[in-house]
Amino acid sequence: MSTLGAIAIAPDTHWVGALDPGLREFDIILKTANGTTYNSYCVRGSSGVAIIDTVKESHAGEFFTRLEQVARYDEITAIVLNHLEPDHTGALPELMRRAPQAKLYISNKAQLMLKALVKHDGLAYTIVNTGDSVDLGGRTLHFLNTPYLHWPDTQCTWLEQQGILFSGDVFGCHFCDSRLFNGQVGDFRFSFEYYYAHIMRPFREHVLDALELIEPLPLKLIAPAHGPILRDAPRSYVQRYRQLAAPLLHNEIGASNKSLLVFYISSYGNTSRMAEAVRDGAETIPGVRVSLYDLQGGGNLPFVDLIEEADGLAFGSPTINGDAVKPVWDLLSSLAVIKVRDKLGAAFGSYGWSGEAVNMIEDRLRGLKLRVPIQGVRARLIPTDEELGLCRDLGKQLALHLTGSIEHRVIAMSELLTQESTHA
Ligand SMILES: Cc1cc2nc3c(=O)[nH]c(=O)nc-3n(C[C@H](O)[C@H](O)[C@H](O)COP(=O)(O)O)c2cc1C
Ligand SMILES: [Fe+2]
Ligand SMILES: [Fe+2]
Image (cartoon, rainbow, N blue to C red):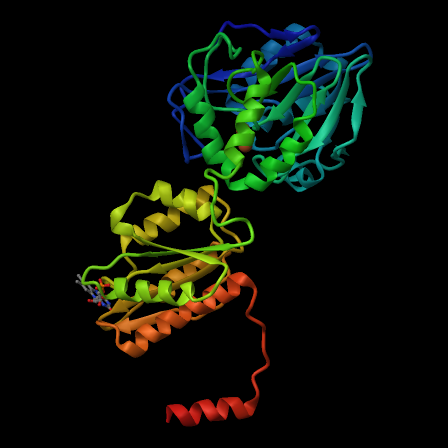
């Protein structure tokens, strides 16, 4: 354990967290080149002491040692949980045993998680929302409901008199440096951006909602749950979140137009011909900007950025060995960092005998919560003119869905009969 003691971040307010310099991977998905910190804070008022978040269970010893340097357990009146992920609540059950009188403050969505973490009868807690506050005597904690940053339960806590925002995972990063303050630690810009890209980016709309609450605050310091405490230029980190959550590029087509991206890959040119037909069909509908991309021509990252801004996505893949091809799966698996729910999706592709790719892609799109209202098109080997016509129609239907011009119509029996007779 580090010999570092509790660190004052403002009068009567201390960092009592833990350092985890040896960690190299967090939550499976994040690399942590020099470890991380689990930041916990202790705020003292004239009539109460609050603990804001705890630490990972493996680091509870450090946390309690630091906490004991600034408060007695019987003085603690409030435990605020900004986020119930185990990296912040691992030491909670033990803290509750040591300070049984302390009241727990959580957001509405944290209740089920709390019950799953602390399994004992008579568990008492107070649900707080934006606008609620706790008075510690000359120190007031105000709660800001900021769901999904990073789990549904997350909230931030604002210490009014000292201008400190205890922000949970928001504005945090995995960067371990015992000098703690942003003006003193090593260069952590990469970690800050990386953390945003992997943890916050999927919840861009929630980030924007949270910024509406945070930006008006007269911030003096941001105390996040991981990484450096942002004492120098705290507002610049808020501005950076605003930039990161904003669209990357100015989109020349204007907000009223819809964007459809057609991705494909093709070995003999069959699926590529189908892709062009999908594009041609979609382009006949005004108000839709259609873009065609060959996955052989690019890495995933720029496409992920485009997909984040797009309204509709169509994927073309041949069937190879009973599957869609790897570049398509790679792109689809990179979409975990952005919100794709409710976008429009479709699939198409050429095949030789079994043709599984189209259905597999459609299933995956549905699994990612895209809407897939139109049956995809498959063509055996070289697409015929008729099959290319079906592709054009697929593009057109997608575009009509995007512009909202498709109406759910009731099909009359007589119409079906006419169709059958034409096919016969
Ligand atoms: C190595 C290889 C494996 C294939 N496996 C399948 C398969 O499992 N099922 C199928 O329907 N077609 C299979 N095919 C046929 C292709 O899907 C077919 O040639 C298709 O027209 C290729 O389209 P493309 O020109 O767009 O790449 C395979 C082709 C190759 C070269
Ligand atoms: Fe988290
Ligand atoms: Fe965390």
